[in-house]
Every structure is written in structure tokens, then in C-alpha cells.
Amino acid sequence: MAAQQMESLSWQETMVRKSNNQEEQFNPDKIRRSVQNAGASQQLADEITQQIQGSTHSGMTTSEIDSNIQETLRQKDMNAYNNWMQWKEQHQSSQ
Image (cartoon, rainbow, N blue to C red; front, side, top):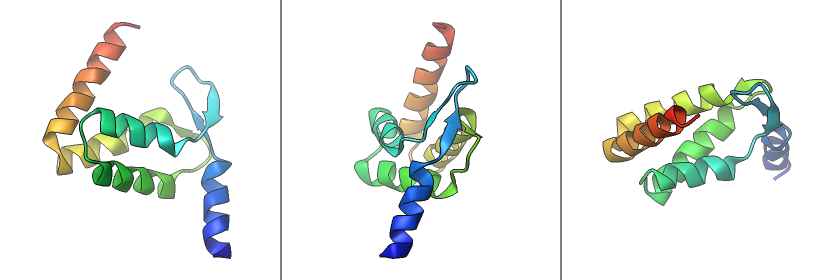
């Protein structure tokens, strides 16, 4: 149990760097919600969230996180991958 608590603390204290160079606290719920919004099942969203949560490190960029999500979606759910990429394209063109 103590090992699980330490593991939880590590990601809770991790800061990620956004594309605008600002840092914010890593939030696994954002990943889970975004992946589900792309059409992935709750099970796949949880799997991706846990995978990324386990590989986070201070200074990790949101681009790195996005690449990891894209790769997993591409391998496991092409429909959710296509939705993810379409949202990304629309979001980038509106900035």
C-alpha cells in the first residue's frame, strides 16, 4: 500500500509543459476525458491514462503526451484515432 501511495504522489507532483511554454500540474482525468470524447471505450481510456501516468516525468510536454495517446489509439481504435486527429486539426486551425 505504501508503494502505491508513493507512486501516486509522484504523478501528482509532476508538472507538464504546455505548448505555450507554461507549466501545469499533470492531470490524468484530462487524458481520460479527452480519450473518451474521441470515442474510445472507458476501458481503453483507462488503459491509456494509466500508461501515460506511469511514464510521466517533470518537464514532460503535452506534445509528448499527445504523441503517446495518438500511437495507442492508432494501434487499438482507429475510429477514436481518426476522431482525435480531426479534433486536433480543427483546434490547431482555429488558433
